[in-house]
Length: 322
Image (cartoon, rainbow, N blue to C red; front, side, top):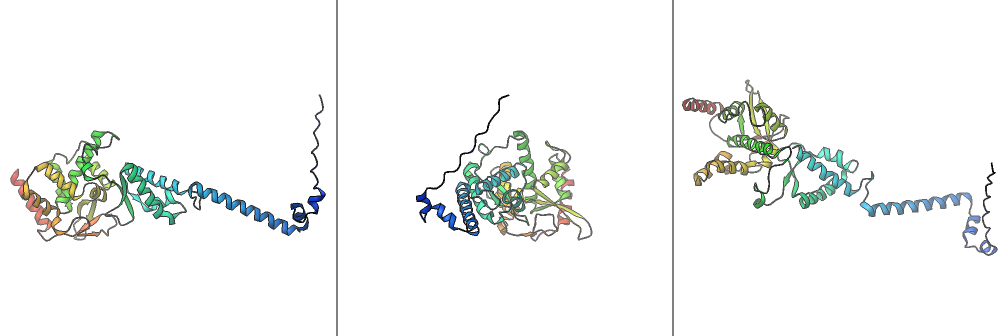
């Protein structure tokens, strides 16, 4: 087996006499420095390289303290908004801090505003403040002009299927309209009577009625409240935050007009009285935060018949109709 001989490393060329004699040459400076000065010079060179690398990183994407760029955080917030809307869940401020910002909580306003621009430009949507939440949260809403908010343009989602989404939209709008036209809240027994008239007290085209109501509560369309302060437990339903945003008083009025047709000034007056629009109820008027920990809003009742008396009179009317 032939021997393999390693080539010797060529010796480093010695500095010429002219370079060694020059006081400004690097070799002369190294020779005149003591070990401490040499270490200090090397550390200064390393710091200069780190600053140059950091400058390059800032040009590539404004890297934050934990290595996450501003562009990446904006994309994460846009994806979080779209995913939350798909599952019909609010976008909580705490989730934004945990899933998007991380250690960059002070960048919330900048990231949020940039994400709003991206949502409006690409998806015609924006994050709107939750109208009835006690904690800071948002709901994704459309920014299309009213002219384009028509069924041919805003069609139901194809996931899971268009017929199922259309049915859910119709039933949820119907229940929200019943609650809104009853003064902002409706007793559970009264809601069951209305659903019985529509032959939906046990089953609906989507699921059992109790399961459908549970789904609407989970997704924020309605809120179920219990009150046992008077001795007897009373259960009532109110419109939830998503119901206020997606349907609202305008949607309820449009549903009534579609059902009853052009009723003239008399119909419009009855709609306004039922919704309390003449008393400044539109938007946030006549509302206060609910303090029982179940979310929702407690609507101030207007003077009128007591609830028990009104319910008993309605029961008498139903018996007469039968």
